[in-house]
Length: 546
Image 1 (spheres, rainbow, N blue to C red):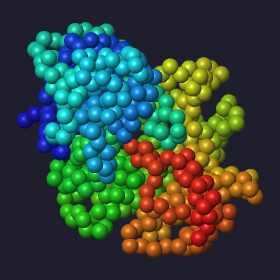
Image 2: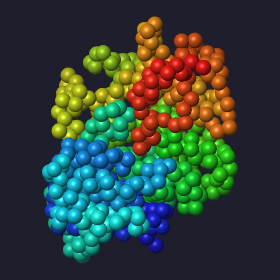
Image 3: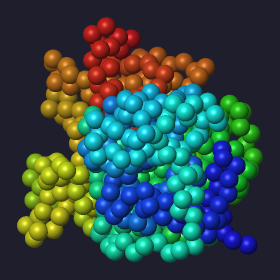
Image 4: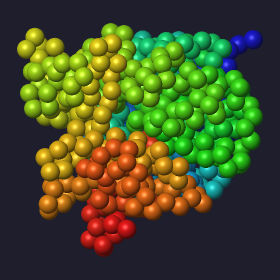
Protein backbone atom coordinates (compact mmCIF):
# COMPACT_ATOMS: atom_id res chain seq x y z
CA UNK A 1 0.00 0.00 0.00
CA UNK A 2 1.40 3.38 -1.04
CA UNK A 3 2.00 6.01 1.62
CA UNK A 4 -0.53 8.85 1.68
CA UNK A 5 1.31 12.15 1.66
CA UNK A 6 -1.50 14.66 1.50
CA UNK A 7 -5.08 14.79 2.77
CA UNK A 8 -7.15 17.82 1.76
CA UNK A 9 -10.35 17.32 3.73
CA UNK A 10 -12.33 20.22 2.30
CA UNK A 11 -11.68 18.79 -1.21
CA UNK A 12 -12.26 15.20 -0.08
CA UNK A 13 -8.96 14.30 -1.69
CA UNK A 14 -6.08 12.03 -0.72
CA UNK A 15 -2.85 11.79 -2.70
CA UNK A 16 0.16 9.51 -2.34
CA UNK A 17 3.75 10.60 -2.77
CA UNK A 18 3.68 9.03 -6.23
CA UNK A 19 0.50 10.93 -7.16
CA UNK A 20 2.08 14.21 -6.17
CA UNK A 21 5.31 13.48 -8.02
CA UNK A 22 3.47 12.67 -11.26
CA UNK A 23 1.08 15.60 -11.01
CA UNK A 24 3.87 18.06 -10.23
CA UNK A 25 5.74 16.74 -13.28
CA UNK A 26 2.63 17.39 -15.39
CA UNK A 27 2.34 20.91 -14.01
CA UNK A 28 6.04 21.58 -14.53
CA UNK A 29 5.80 20.48 -18.17
CA UNK A 30 2.61 22.48 -18.69
CA UNK A 31 4.16 25.64 -17.27
CA UNK A 32 7.37 25.12 -19.23
CA UNK A 33 5.38 24.77 -22.46
CA UNK A 34 3.64 28.04 -21.60
CA UNK A 35 6.93 29.86 -21.37
CA UNK A 36 7.85 29.62 -17.70
CA UNK A 37 11.61 29.27 -17.48
CA UNK A 38 14.32 29.14 -14.87
CA UNK A 39 14.46 32.32 -12.79
CA UNK A 40 10.96 33.54 -13.70
CA UNK A 41 8.93 34.76 -10.75
CA UNK A 42 5.56 33.04 -10.57
CA UNK A 43 3.14 34.37 -7.97
CA UNK A 44 0.60 32.13 -6.26
CA UNK A 45 -2.47 33.28 -4.37
CA UNK A 46 -4.24 30.15 -3.10
CA UNK A 47 -5.42 28.65 0.16
CA UNK A 48 -4.32 25.29 1.58
CA UNK A 49 -5.37 22.87 -1.14
CA UNK A 50 -4.18 20.10 -3.46
CA UNK A 51 -3.35 22.54 -6.23
CA UNK A 52 -1.03 24.59 -4.03
CA UNK A 53 0.67 21.43 -2.80
CA UNK A 54 1.29 20.17 -6.32
CA UNK A 55 2.42 23.60 -7.36
CA UNK A 56 4.66 24.52 -4.52
CA UNK A 57 5.59 21.74 -2.16
CA UNK A 58 6.05 18.91 -4.64
CA UNK A 59 8.11 21.06 -6.91
CA UNK A 60 5.92 21.81 -9.91
CA UNK A 61 7.77 25.10 -10.06
CA UNK A 62 10.95 23.97 -8.38
CA UNK A 63 11.52 21.24 -10.96
CA UNK A 64 11.88 23.79 -13.76
CA UNK A 65 13.87 26.29 -11.73
CA UNK A 66 11.19 28.97 -11.62
CA UNK A 67 10.85 31.04 -8.44
CA UNK A 68 7.71 30.69 -6.36
CA UNK A 69 6.35 33.96 -4.98
CA UNK A 70 3.58 33.12 -2.50
CA UNK A 71 1.04 35.88 -1.95
CA UNK A 72 -1.16 36.28 1.09
CA UNK A 73 -4.70 35.55 -0.21
CA UNK A 74 -5.86 38.39 2.02
CA UNK A 75 -3.95 40.93 -0.09
CA UNK A 76 -6.17 43.50 -1.78
CA UNK A 77 -5.72 44.46 -5.43
CA UNK A 78 -3.23 47.22 -4.66
CA UNK A 79 -1.07 44.86 -2.60
CA UNK A 80 -1.15 42.15 -5.28
CA UNK A 81 -0.22 44.65 -7.99
CA UNK A 82 2.61 46.08 -5.86
CA UNK A 83 4.00 42.60 -5.17
CA UNK A 84 3.83 41.50 -8.82
CA UNK A 85 5.39 44.73 -10.03
CA UNK A 86 8.18 44.62 -7.44
CA UNK A 87 9.16 41.08 -8.51
CA UNK A 88 8.43 41.67 -12.22
CA UNK A 89 6.40 38.47 -12.09
CA UNK A 90 5.66 36.68 -15.35
CA UNK A 91 2.73 34.52 -14.19
CA UNK A 92 0.04 34.56 -11.52
CA UNK A 93 -1.88 31.52 -10.28
CA UNK A 94 -4.98 32.52 -8.34
CA UNK A 95 -8.32 31.04 -7.29
CA UNK A 96 -11.61 32.32 -8.65
CA UNK A 97 -12.45 32.95 -4.99
CA UNK A 98 -10.42 33.66 -1.89
CA UNK A 99 -11.30 32.07 1.44
CA UNK A 100 -10.20 33.84 4.60
CA UNK A 101 -10.80 32.93 8.27
CA UNK A 102 -14.25 33.86 9.59
CA UNK A 103 -15.32 35.49 6.32
CA UNK A 104 -17.52 34.61 3.38
CA UNK A 105 -15.70 33.63 0.14
CA UNK A 106 -14.56 36.65 -1.87
CA UNK A 107 -14.70 36.68 -5.66
CA UNK A 108 -11.40 37.67 -7.25
CA UNK A 109 -13.04 39.09 -10.37
CA UNK A 110 -12.73 42.68 -9.17
CA UNK A 111 -9.11 42.17 -8.16
CA UNK A 112 -8.28 40.75 -11.59
CA UNK A 113 -10.09 43.63 -13.29
CA UNK A 114 -7.82 46.11 -11.51
CA UNK A 115 -4.79 44.08 -12.55
CA UNK A 116 -5.99 43.46 -16.13
CA UNK A 117 -8.57 46.14 -17.04
CA UNK A 118 -9.77 44.40 -20.23
CA UNK A 119 -10.91 40.93 -19.17
CA UNK A 120 -12.51 40.32 -22.57
CA UNK A 121 -9.26 40.66 -24.49
CA UNK A 122 -7.59 37.64 -26.07
CA UNK A 123 -4.40 38.04 -24.06
CA UNK A 124 -3.23 39.47 -20.75
CA UNK A 125 -2.23 43.12 -20.88
CA UNK A 126 -1.47 44.91 -17.61
CA UNK A 127 -0.22 48.47 -17.58
CA UNK A 128 0.37 48.17 -13.83
CA UNK A 129 2.48 44.99 -14.23
CA UNK A 130 3.96 44.99 -17.76
CA UNK A 131 5.93 41.79 -17.05
CA UNK A 132 2.75 39.76 -16.50
CA UNK A 133 2.26 37.25 -19.33
CA UNK A 134 -0.46 34.90 -18.06
CA UNK A 135 -2.99 34.48 -15.27
CA UNK A 136 -3.71 30.83 -14.46
CA UNK A 137 -7.06 30.42 -12.76
CA UNK A 138 -8.00 27.67 -10.32
CA UNK A 139 -11.78 27.28 -10.18
CA UNK A 140 -12.71 26.91 -6.51
CA UNK A 141 -15.99 28.85 -6.49
CA UNK A 142 -18.28 25.91 -7.35
CA UNK A 143 -19.76 27.95 -10.18
CA UNK A 144 -20.35 31.17 -8.23
CA UNK A 145 -17.86 33.09 -10.41
CA UNK A 146 -18.73 33.55 -14.11
CA UNK A 147 -15.61 32.41 -15.99
CA UNK A 148 -16.84 33.99 -19.23
CA UNK A 149 -16.02 37.34 -17.62
CA UNK A 150 -12.37 36.28 -17.33
CA UNK A 151 -11.60 35.49 -20.96
CA UNK A 152 -7.80 35.97 -21.15
CA UNK A 153 -7.09 33.72 -18.15
CA UNK A 154 -5.99 30.08 -18.48
CA UNK A 155 -7.60 27.25 -16.54
CA UNK A 156 -5.30 25.46 -14.08
CA UNK A 157 -6.56 22.03 -15.19
CA UNK A 158 -5.76 22.96 -18.80
CA UNK A 159 -2.13 23.57 -17.87
CA UNK A 160 -2.02 20.22 -16.08
CA UNK A 161 -3.49 18.35 -19.02
CA UNK A 162 -1.15 20.08 -21.48
CA UNK A 163 1.78 18.82 -19.44
CA UNK A 164 0.51 15.26 -19.12
CA UNK A 165 3.22 13.13 -20.70
CA UNK A 166 5.48 10.20 -19.81
CA UNK A 167 8.46 12.10 -21.22
CA UNK A 168 11.09 13.30 -18.74
CA UNK A 169 11.30 16.96 -17.88
CA UNK A 170 13.93 18.96 -19.75
CA UNK A 171 17.08 19.52 -17.69
CA UNK A 172 17.16 22.94 -16.07
CA UNK A 173 20.66 23.04 -14.54
CA UNK A 174 19.41 23.62 -11.01
CA UNK A 175 21.82 24.41 -8.19
CA UNK A 176 21.43 24.25 -4.38
CA UNK A 177 21.95 28.00 -3.91
CA UNK A 178 19.48 29.03 -6.62
CA UNK A 179 16.61 31.17 -5.30
CA UNK A 180 13.41 29.12 -5.39
CA UNK A 181 11.06 30.96 -3.04
CA UNK A 182 10.54 34.68 -2.46
CA UNK A 183 8.58 35.13 0.74
CA UNK A 184 7.05 38.46 1.64
CA UNK A 185 7.65 39.07 5.33
CA UNK A 186 4.50 38.54 7.31
CA UNK A 187 3.77 42.15 8.12
CA UNK A 188 3.97 42.77 11.88
CA UNK A 189 5.49 46.01 10.62
CA UNK A 190 3.89 48.17 7.96
CA UNK A 191 6.54 47.48 5.32
CA UNK A 192 6.77 43.81 4.23
CA UNK A 193 9.95 42.85 2.36
CA UNK A 194 10.66 40.10 -0.17
CA UNK A 195 13.10 37.55 1.31
CA UNK A 196 14.90 35.29 -1.20
CA UNK A 197 15.25 31.69 0.01
CA UNK A 198 17.14 28.87 -1.71
CA UNK A 199 16.72 25.15 -2.41
CA UNK A 200 19.44 24.44 0.15
CA UNK A 201 18.04 26.62 2.92
CA UNK A 202 14.44 25.42 2.69
CA UNK A 203 15.10 21.71 2.28
CA UNK A 204 17.65 21.50 5.08
CA UNK A 205 15.52 23.59 7.41
CA UNK A 206 12.53 21.31 6.88
CA UNK A 207 14.72 18.25 7.49
CA UNK A 208 16.09 19.65 10.77
CA UNK A 209 12.60 20.58 12.00
CA UNK A 210 11.25 17.10 11.31
CA UNK A 211 14.26 15.57 13.04
CA UNK A 212 13.58 17.54 16.23
CA UNK A 213 9.94 16.43 16.17
CA UNK A 214 11.04 12.81 15.67
CA UNK A 215 8.76 12.54 12.64
CA UNK A 216 8.49 9.20 10.83
CA UNK A 217 6.38 7.75 8.02
CA UNK A 218 3.84 6.80 10.72
CA UNK A 219 3.10 10.42 11.62
CA UNK A 220 0.07 12.36 10.40
CA UNK A 221 0.48 16.12 10.80
CA UNK A 222 -2.56 18.42 10.94
CA UNK A 223 -1.44 21.72 9.41
CA UNK A 224 -3.90 24.64 9.59
CA UNK A 225 -1.22 27.38 9.15
CA UNK A 226 -1.22 28.71 5.57
CA UNK A 227 0.98 27.35 2.79
CA UNK A 228 1.82 30.84 1.56
CA UNK A 229 3.65 31.34 4.86
CA UNK A 230 6.87 29.61 5.93
CA UNK A 231 4.94 27.87 8.72
CA UNK A 232 2.83 25.92 6.26
CA UNK A 233 5.26 25.38 3.42
CA UNK A 234 8.47 24.61 5.37
CA UNK A 235 7.56 23.61 8.93
CA UNK A 236 4.60 21.79 7.42
CA UNK A 237 5.36 20.53 3.95
CA UNK A 238 9.15 20.30 3.95
CA UNK A 239 9.29 18.71 7.41
CA UNK A 240 6.76 16.02 6.46
CA UNK A 241 8.08 15.41 2.94
CA UNK A 242 11.64 14.85 4.19
CA UNK A 243 10.40 12.23 6.69
CA UNK A 244 7.74 10.39 4.70
CA UNK A 245 4.96 11.69 6.96
CA UNK A 246 1.44 12.62 5.90
CA UNK A 247 0.07 16.16 6.08
CA UNK A 248 -3.59 17.12 6.53
CA UNK A 249 -5.21 20.38 5.42
CA UNK A 250 -8.52 20.83 7.31
CA UNK A 251 -9.72 23.79 5.20
CA UNK A 252 -8.37 26.43 2.80
CA UNK A 253 -8.24 28.98 5.62
CA UNK A 254 -8.03 28.40 9.36
CA UNK A 255 -11.18 27.09 11.02
CA UNK A 256 -10.79 25.84 14.63
CA UNK A 257 -13.77 23.47 14.42
CA UNK A 258 -12.59 21.88 11.17
CA UNK A 259 -9.08 21.58 12.62
CA UNK A 260 -10.23 19.63 15.67
CA UNK A 261 -12.47 17.39 13.54
CA UNK A 262 -9.53 16.68 11.25
CA UNK A 263 -7.39 15.65 14.23
CA UNK A 264 -10.14 13.35 15.48
CA UNK A 265 -11.12 11.73 12.19
CA UNK A 266 -7.67 11.40 10.61
CA UNK A 267 -6.02 10.07 13.80
CA UNK A 268 -3.46 12.87 13.63
CA UNK A 269 -0.30 12.48 15.69
CA UNK A 270 0.80 16.12 15.41
CA UNK A 271 -0.92 19.52 15.42
CA UNK A 272 0.52 22.86 14.31
CA UNK A 273 -0.55 26.35 15.26
CA UNK A 274 0.21 29.80 16.54
CA UNK A 275 -1.07 30.72 20.01
CA UNK A 276 -4.23 32.37 18.68
CA UNK A 277 -5.13 29.17 16.80
CA UNK A 278 -4.62 26.98 19.86
CA UNK A 279 -6.67 29.41 21.99
CA UNK A 280 -9.60 29.17 19.55
CA UNK A 281 -9.41 25.36 19.54
CA UNK A 282 -9.28 25.09 23.33
CA UNK A 283 -12.28 27.40 23.55
CA UNK A 284 -14.37 24.98 21.45
CA UNK A 285 -13.40 22.10 23.72
CA UNK A 286 -14.06 24.13 26.84
CA UNK A 287 -17.59 25.17 25.79
CA UNK A 288 -18.51 21.69 24.52
CA UNK A 289 -18.83 22.57 20.83
CA UNK A 290 -16.36 19.76 20.09
CA UNK A 291 -16.45 16.65 22.33
CA UNK A 292 -13.24 15.67 24.05
CA UNK A 293 -12.68 12.37 22.24
CA UNK A 294 -10.34 11.20 19.51
CA UNK A 295 -7.21 13.05 20.59
CA UNK A 296 -5.36 10.05 21.99
CA UNK A 297 -3.12 9.74 18.92
CA UNK A 298 -1.69 13.26 19.33
CA UNK A 299 1.81 13.44 20.75
CA UNK A 300 3.71 16.30 19.13
CA UNK A 301 3.34 19.41 17.04
CA UNK A 302 4.69 22.92 16.71
CA UNK A 303 3.75 26.17 18.37
CA UNK A 304 5.37 29.11 16.60
CA UNK A 305 4.75 32.61 15.32
CA UNK A 306 4.87 34.29 18.73
CA UNK A 307 5.58 33.33 22.33
CA UNK A 308 3.05 30.89 23.73
CA UNK A 309 1.71 31.73 27.20
CA UNK A 310 2.60 29.20 29.91
CA UNK A 311 -1.04 28.57 30.77
CA UNK A 312 -1.87 27.66 27.16
CA UNK A 313 1.11 25.30 26.98
CA UNK A 314 -0.07 23.48 30.08
CA UNK A 315 -3.59 23.16 28.67
CA UNK A 316 -2.26 21.76 25.39
CA UNK A 317 -0.35 19.12 27.35
CA UNK A 318 -3.30 18.22 29.55
CA UNK A 319 -6.29 18.59 27.24
CA UNK A 320 -4.91 17.72 23.79
CA UNK A 321 -2.23 15.25 24.89
CA UNK A 322 0.49 17.33 23.18
CA UNK A 323 3.09 16.20 25.70
CA UNK A 324 5.86 16.38 23.06
CA UNK A 325 4.82 19.74 21.63
CA UNK A 326 7.82 21.67 20.32
CA UNK A 327 8.44 25.40 20.13
CA UNK A 328 9.99 26.91 17.01
CA UNK A 329 11.62 30.30 16.71
CA UNK A 330 12.74 32.06 13.57
CA UNK A 331 11.89 34.58 10.92
CA UNK A 332 11.09 34.52 7.22
CA UNK A 333 14.63 35.65 6.47
CA UNK A 334 16.08 32.50 8.11
CA UNK A 335 14.10 29.96 6.09
CA UNK A 336 12.55 30.23 8.78
CA UNK A 337 13.57 28.27 11.93
CA UNK A 338 16.86 28.92 13.71
CA UNK A 339 16.05 27.56 17.20
CA UNK A 340 13.69 24.86 18.43
CA UNK A 341 12.96 22.78 21.50
CA UNK A 342 13.03 18.98 21.43
CA UNK A 343 10.22 16.58 22.24
CA UNK A 344 11.81 15.71 25.59
CA UNK A 345 12.94 19.11 26.78
CA UNK A 346 11.61 19.84 30.28
CA UNK A 347 8.26 21.63 30.26
CA UNK A 348 9.78 24.73 31.83
CA UNK A 349 12.25 25.01 28.94
CA UNK A 350 9.41 24.77 26.42
CA UNK A 351 7.54 27.49 28.31
CA UNK A 352 10.46 29.74 29.12
CA UNK A 353 12.65 29.35 26.01
CA UNK A 354 12.61 28.60 22.29
CA UNK A 355 15.15 25.82 22.67
CA UNK A 356 18.61 25.63 21.15
CA UNK A 357 19.84 26.42 17.64
CA UNK A 358 19.32 23.81 14.93
CA UNK A 359 22.31 21.87 13.53
CA UNK A 360 24.69 23.89 11.33
CA UNK A 361 23.37 27.18 12.77
CA UNK A 362 25.28 29.65 14.94
CA UNK A 363 23.76 32.29 17.21
CA UNK A 364 25.00 35.00 19.54
CA UNK A 365 23.55 37.84 21.56
CA UNK A 366 25.07 41.23 20.81
CA UNK A 367 24.70 44.73 22.15
CA UNK A 368 21.95 46.60 20.26
CA UNK A 369 24.16 49.69 20.21
CA UNK A 370 27.47 47.94 19.42
CA UNK A 371 27.12 44.92 17.16
CA UNK A 372 30.76 43.94 17.67
CA UNK A 373 30.16 43.35 21.39
CA UNK A 374 29.01 39.81 22.27
CA UNK A 375 27.08 39.84 25.54
CA UNK A 376 27.69 37.28 28.31
CA UNK A 377 25.36 34.44 29.30
CA UNK A 378 22.13 35.70 30.86
CA UNK A 379 22.38 39.24 29.52
CA UNK A 380 19.75 40.62 27.14
CA UNK A 381 20.64 41.98 23.73
CA UNK A 382 19.86 41.44 20.05
CA UNK A 383 19.89 37.86 18.74
CA UNK A 384 21.85 37.38 15.52
CA UNK A 385 22.25 34.11 13.58
CA UNK A 386 24.54 32.69 10.92
CA UNK A 387 24.39 29.63 8.67
CA UNK A 388 22.95 28.00 5.57
CA UNK A 389 19.47 29.19 6.55
CA UNK A 390 20.10 32.93 6.13
CA UNK A 391 18.34 34.36 3.09
CA UNK A 392 20.28 35.33 0.01
CA UNK A 393 18.93 38.90 -0.01
CA UNK A 394 15.81 41.02 -0.09
CA UNK A 395 14.70 41.15 -3.72
CA UNK A 396 15.89 44.34 -5.41
CA UNK A 397 16.57 46.04 -2.08
CA UNK A 398 20.31 46.19 -1.48
CA UNK A 399 20.08 48.90 1.18
CA UNK A 400 17.49 47.02 3.23
CA UNK A 401 19.51 43.81 2.87
CA UNK A 402 22.65 45.54 4.18
CA UNK A 403 20.73 46.77 7.24
CA UNK A 404 20.07 43.23 8.50
CA UNK A 405 22.82 41.06 6.96
CA UNK A 406 25.95 42.41 8.60
CA UNK A 407 29.47 40.93 8.24
CA UNK A 408 31.68 40.63 11.32
CA UNK A 409 35.39 41.37 11.39
CA UNK A 410 36.07 37.98 9.78
CA UNK A 411 33.62 38.52 6.95
CA UNK A 412 31.03 36.09 8.35
CA UNK A 413 27.47 37.27 7.60
CA UNK A 414 25.10 37.53 10.56
CA UNK A 415 21.35 38.01 10.26
CA UNK A 416 20.07 40.61 12.72
CA UNK A 417 16.70 39.38 13.95
CA UNK A 418 15.52 42.55 15.70
CA UNK A 419 14.53 40.33 18.64
CA UNK A 420 15.74 40.88 22.15
CA UNK A 421 17.01 37.65 23.69
CA UNK A 422 19.22 36.08 26.28
CA UNK A 423 21.04 32.73 26.26
CA UNK A 424 21.74 30.50 29.25
CA UNK A 425 24.81 28.41 29.97
CA UNK A 426 23.22 25.35 28.32
CA UNK A 427 22.49 27.17 25.07
CA UNK A 428 18.75 27.65 25.56
CA UNK A 429 17.54 30.90 24.02
CA UNK A 430 14.86 33.03 25.64
CA UNK A 431 13.13 35.65 23.48
CA UNK A 432 12.13 38.60 25.63
CA UNK A 433 10.47 40.72 22.94
CA UNK A 434 11.04 42.79 19.84
CA UNK A 435 13.67 45.42 20.43
CA UNK A 436 11.43 48.04 18.84
CA UNK A 437 8.49 46.92 21.04
CA UNK A 438 10.32 47.52 24.30
CA UNK A 439 8.50 50.14 26.36
CA UNK A 440 10.79 52.77 27.87
CA UNK A 441 8.96 54.25 30.85
CA UNK A 442 10.86 56.96 32.67
CA UNK A 443 14.13 55.56 31.36
CA UNK A 444 13.35 52.00 32.46
CA UNK A 445 12.96 49.19 29.92
CA UNK A 446 9.72 47.21 30.13
CA UNK A 447 9.27 44.01 28.17
CA UNK A 448 5.66 43.57 26.90
CA UNK A 449 5.88 39.77 27.02
CA UNK A 450 6.43 39.81 30.78
CA UNK A 451 3.27 41.85 31.34
CA UNK A 452 1.28 39.80 28.79
CA UNK A 453 2.16 36.51 30.51
CA UNK A 454 1.09 37.97 33.84
CA UNK A 455 -2.31 39.27 32.62
CA UNK A 456 -2.93 36.00 30.82
CA UNK A 457 -3.03 34.32 34.21
CA UNK A 458 -6.39 35.96 34.91
CA UNK A 459 -9.11 33.36 34.34
CA UNK A 460 -11.39 35.81 32.51
CA UNK A 461 -8.71 36.78 29.99
CA UNK A 462 -8.75 35.02 26.62
CA UNK A 463 -6.02 37.04 24.86
CA UNK A 464 -3.85 40.03 25.71
CA UNK A 465 -1.37 42.20 23.88
CA UNK A 466 0.70 44.96 25.48
CA UNK A 467 2.19 48.00 23.74
CA UNK A 468 3.71 51.30 24.78
CA UNK A 469 1.83 54.54 24.23
CA UNK A 470 3.35 58.02 24.34
CA UNK A 471 3.07 59.82 27.66
CA UNK A 472 4.13 63.37 28.50
CA UNK A 473 5.46 62.51 31.94
CA UNK A 474 7.11 59.10 31.42
CA UNK A 475 7.81 59.07 27.69
CA UNK A 476 5.87 55.83 27.32
CA UNK A 477 3.39 53.92 29.46
CA UNK A 478 2.16 50.34 29.51
CA UNK A 479 -1.12 49.79 27.65
CA UNK A 480 -2.99 46.48 27.51
CA UNK A 481 -5.48 45.36 24.87
CA UNK A 482 -7.56 42.57 26.40
CA UNK A 483 -9.99 40.05 24.91
CA UNK A 484 -12.26 38.47 27.56
CA UNK A 485 -13.65 34.96 27.54
CA UNK A 486 -17.33 35.00 26.61
CA UNK A 487 -19.49 35.24 29.69
CA UNK A 488 -16.62 36.31 31.93
CA UNK A 489 -16.13 39.71 33.50
CA UNK A 490 -13.09 41.52 34.75
CA UNK A 491 -12.50 45.23 35.34
CA UNK A 492 -9.53 47.40 34.41
CA UNK A 493 -8.78 47.93 38.09
CA UNK A 494 -8.73 44.17 38.63
CA UNK A 495 -6.22 43.82 35.81
CA UNK A 496 -4.03 46.53 37.34
CA UNK A 497 -4.28 45.02 40.82
CA UNK A 498 -3.31 41.59 39.45
CA UNK A 499 -0.20 42.95 37.74
CA UNK A 500 0.75 45.04 40.78
CA UNK A 501 0.57 41.97 43.03
CA UNK A 502 2.32 39.57 40.65
CA UNK A 503 4.99 41.89 39.25
CA UNK A 504 5.73 45.45 40.31
CA UNK A 505 4.17 48.89 40.24
CA UNK A 506 6.01 50.25 37.19
CA UNK A 507 4.69 47.37 35.06
CA UNK A 508 1.03 48.12 35.81
CA UNK A 509 -0.91 49.19 32.67
CA UNK A 510 -2.02 52.82 32.70
CA UNK A 511 -4.52 52.03 29.96
CA UNK A 512 -6.66 48.89 29.61
CA UNK A 513 -8.65 48.59 26.39
CA UNK A 514 -11.36 45.98 25.91
CA UNK A 515 -11.37 44.60 22.36
CA UNK A 516 -13.07 41.77 20.46
CA UNK A 517 -10.01 40.82 18.40
CA UNK A 518 -6.67 42.08 17.13
CA UNK A 519 -5.26 43.14 13.77
CA UNK A 520 -3.22 40.10 12.76
CA UNK A 521 -1.15 38.76 9.94
CA UNK A 522 -2.52 35.70 8.17
CA UNK A 523 -0.10 33.58 10.19
CA UNK A 524 -1.68 34.85 13.42
CA UNK A 525 0.90 37.38 14.58
CA UNK A 526 -0.53 40.47 16.23
CA UNK A 527 0.33 43.67 14.37
CA UNK A 528 1.37 45.85 17.29
CA UNK A 529 1.99 48.92 15.16
CA UNK A 530 -1.73 48.93 14.36
CA UNK A 531 -2.61 48.47 18.03
CA UNK A 532 -0.49 51.52 18.87
CA UNK A 533 -2.38 53.60 16.30
CA UNK A 534 -5.69 52.39 17.73
CA UNK A 535 -4.51 53.10 21.27
CA UNK A 536 -3.59 56.68 20.42
CA UNK A 537 -7.05 57.18 18.95
CA UNK A 538 -8.80 55.65 21.99
CA UNK A 539 -6.79 57.78 24.44
CA UNK A 540 -7.84 60.90 22.54
CA UNK A 541 -11.43 59.73 23.01
CA UNK A 542 -10.85 59.47 26.75
CA UNK A 543 -10.92 55.65 26.87
CA UNK A 544 -8.69 53.11 28.56
CA UNK A 545 -8.47 54.54 32.07
CA UNK A 546 -11.56 52.76 33.45
